[in-house]
Image 1 (cartoon, rainbow, N blue to C red):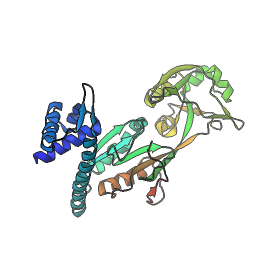
Image 2: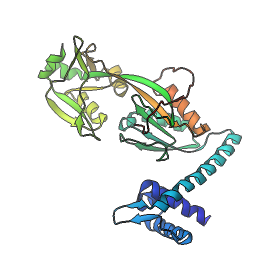
Image 3: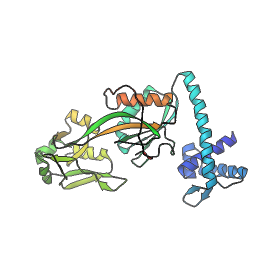
Image 4: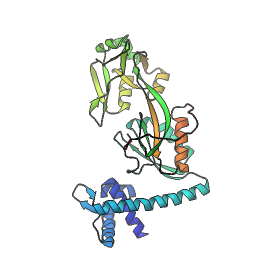
Length: 312
């Protein structure tokens, strides 16, 4: 068991590139991780990591050993899967990566936790490029068209953008009748945190794309602050409809220029095609499909992505 613990410490440190992060994940100190790896290196007679004051990186021997360890843990996971299938109750940890906007999915995720209390969700919120397999995720949720031959995918639902403001804002500033009218309004803009670029508003005037010529009042790297500022009457925002569904229904926000805002998108869930669809992942995929957008999707069809190396 001590050897198994050392292997687990090594794998976590290798995948997270940090003894501190590995210790936090396993609930032990970074020094305990360091000592476990040192004992493993001594027993194997090789150096597994290059160490510096700020980071650790794998040696060639460490990279080779990591692949072997991953196979060991996959076999353990398969054994646990067989046992869970015999009990008939989905259980265990489910590691899922979601975009930053995934915070707006929390009501659905909370409902899933109540429906399947034996499943432990390990949620990672990030808009960065994610390598699903190398980083050990069971599944990822992302928008857009994704192609990766190593992954299976299922459509969760579609959304479209809406240009919105509060009733108080429109009382004070009036409603824009055309995209050109936006030059007299206040913009609440979304900033892509990974690129440092402000997101364009997808406006079309008489069939041609129209850059949003609008004074910017505030910029935020998350959607929630833009929703709040719009509710307070401080400007207009262009946001996906699923993020503001409640505000629109309650009349806290009002949509304008419906015919001019053309952009739409798709949420998808993806998982490694080489991995057996475990009961915990199966119920998660089904639950998210049935509840995230409160609409009925086609029957389960797990499609392989057609051909890229990294999933975004």
